[in-house]
Image (cartoon, rainbow, N blue to C red):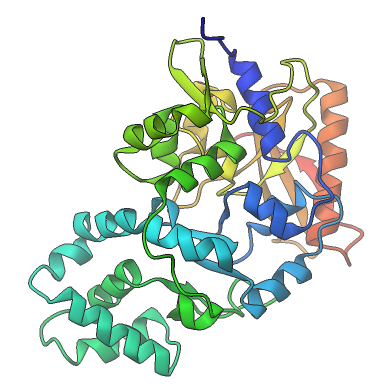
Length: 368
């Protein structure tokens, strides 16, 4: 008989994989591999994802790895920018190629370039970017000279979806800034792409960081289709469970699955944190009521706070005054010990964000 895992057991299992039950002393590269990358479409907020998971996190070290090409920011799962190692990028990008192609096909850029020879666009785009990395606008202007009547932005998006490209530093480097500048991934990293997709490897990496999980969860996280066939092909290497609703869940046999009463400390999550984008059914970490509070405004979801393993507040940095403040907006009433733990963890985050400003303080605010 297949064992049933409660919502709270799923919560603790996922938090353990995500290094959110206790901080780790592993290096950032190992943390990143376990997490199957960090969603990194903003230049810097994802650094908080490391800070919440690592004991002694040095953002400048990650910045150096990004500058050296050991880490890259490129579009992968769900066609969104992720931070991954150069080695993982080499096989993840061919595996998520179907996701990139679907993004192009179903969007306005695809409709605008329907009559264009896209292979020719990609070949020209690669040739141009090998000569000099360019912003998407600059790339579009150069490619657009070849196809009269087609917007350069649409042609640049074809390159972005069909050619593995990375965003170059200094954009994304802690303490630095810069426009998005693109270069072919293989010329930047020196690593050739894998000869073809490996969806099985992606599913196994996903389960290591997010399991136990359903087929729908795999699909929601990756953006891939036909994932049931992939999971079925891995059954002999996996174990299965059921959740409270009877949905079949899959996991790695030796992956940690803590008890439901394992303590879960307060943690601050960044706006696009993996934890809230890893499952089709997010009830293991956020209630249905609170999920509605996380709807993106202008494309930017709120950053959140975990209390006892579940989303229980949002947070933002207020820089409107001379001294920055960390504003926490509770979704429910907190008891005194929860308030103390939120304050302690928030002050740790403030020390990370503003190491030279000892006057920065945490404030509890009312919902808008």
